[in-house]
Length: 349
Image (cartoon, helix red, strand yellow):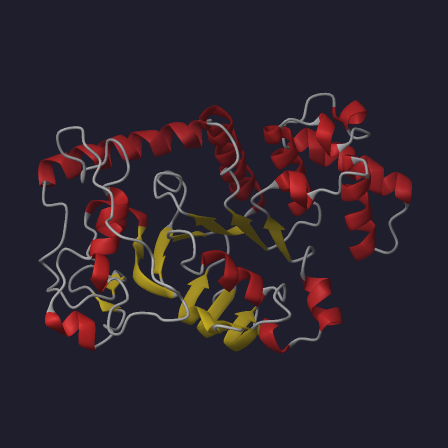
């Protein structure tokens, strides 16, 4: 059994203008020690789906199931769910400045979280653990910085502190929600390397939420691409990068500098805008922006079905399985070799 298995998850928000159908039937699973990357544009349902699973959307209409070690999280009361959040499932939020309380010292916030879940731990013990955790994530002089306030940390250091808090109770699953969006490129790379190292060291399952396929290039085992509240493609990382099937996935790849989808040094943006989740287009929701659109795309929603010959590769598109792909096998082979070299170097570090 998978560590986390989500089936037919739907999330809706009643509004004065109508029901916002943020997630429209999402299914996925995460194995122990593995990384699932959930990718898509803003508004595709990435963050909403994980927040719904963790009980962080009390006003939403939620259905489906989310089995964590056989326990359906969606049926638990708040008290039982609170015991799981933080202790067995932790979250690294997008903006650490708003996630950390500005009026409390960083070390106190980490220590207090430990004491909430482990009642027998004294304040002194929790403080020592907070110092150890800050040192583990690379905060210099942790015994001194443990008494600093969040505004005294840089953006990268605040995110490291959030990672320390997420790992404080040795969780089995960590949800990293856009953990590097607010950081510059250099710090972003450092944070991603830190997450990879700690995941391998502690055997944690990781759900990485991002809008950027480039972020997950060196760390995801499996990638799920979402659009308009639904998964449109799911595959292992190499298959998705080198032989994508869905036009939306191809469009995301063509927006990454240096990818096989970029020709003559030019990036190709996806035309148009994501649809309103109150009035989602009939058929395939991507058809108004798709250069391969056919009449059937406007009439029927394609199921997420297996792409022939590619193992667990699945795509929700009416196009024949051979019709979409990067097509340049020599270039794909070159990038596969470069990817393998990067992975080897990361492992060595």
